[in-house]
Image 1 (spheres, rainbow, N blue to C red):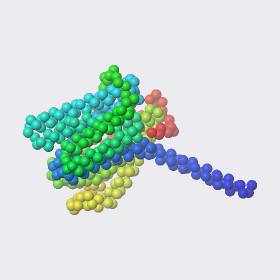
Image 2: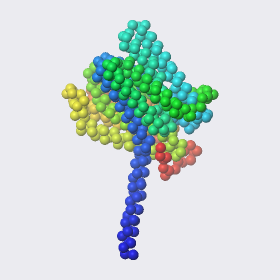
Image 3: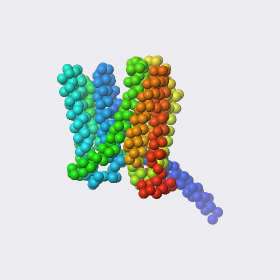
Image 4: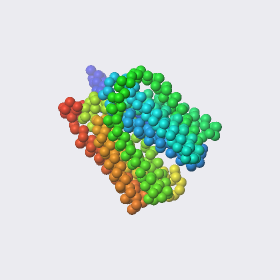
Length: 457
């Protein structure tokens, strides 16, 4: 019996450690579930592919050709943002409240996406014809035709990604994007080997790669769609009711994103605009992580709201904001101590390193923006699309006023302070709207259980 006591104590020690270990793993799984990790891997694949194509164009052509390619990418970005605002985000939010059968509703949304693809293709074709009539440079004409052919397939690839994210089928989105990445690497390699790299060629190659993978995706998920046009009108109304507000907010966001470079160019000259772009490009290193994390926040918040109520949604939004804020705070810490060295490494001219203060302020502004994202997406998940749009538009107006004033007074440093102030006010506005418009009650009107754990998604 004396010999059995240590064994019993040893077992008791093991038993006391297991709950602690399980609690740790449970906390980690809560903060970073498997779907979040897969979404991060997916965004890294997308961003790496885009960066590869950009570098190949930059190294194989002159700055003018690179500028033409950047113009085409900005057009694509606008079209993708429009599709997300009008179709895929409303679909993700109303996924559990379809106008009719889920499969028929999914088909109706797919048809709406096809219609939008056709509209953008026609617009690009009209742009090409206009360029011909105006006697524009042949490169612009070829670019417009390439966009007309590629845009529908690029948009459909993005629809497939967002459809998978809405259903939290993140592995499906990852396989789709890995397929696009593999085909893109092959296509870019062939063009580079043949010495045929150009902006129109890269746009066309992107369209072909997206077309192949999207057709394969449609075949793989064909059972999720039921061919029927009976619910098309109801789906259109449901998407428009939310999408019109998301689109107006997205336009404000686009304005805010492109505002500072243009104001810097107008008020400070090309050199000031170039310095700002260099600093912003370093802050953009965090985009794959932020976008990868946020890609599935909307459908995840919708699931949590449906299953666990508003109290759980509030806790999850706060925890996600803290997690994203912690990542961005670590990035800011690196920038504060190594910002000048990073600037010298990437941009060898000494004038860039002299703007490390601007870089630090923009990093802090990105921190404020990131912390406000969960509040905005959680607000959208509860159906308050109008409030989301109002906050984003108001933030854009405040940023415009502040940047115009401080850039004229104190140059690029003043513009950086203006961006920081504007983004901080925007984040405060998002969280204020969320707390005020989403009361701590569930949909039945009863108080949400504050002790309920959110569903792990």
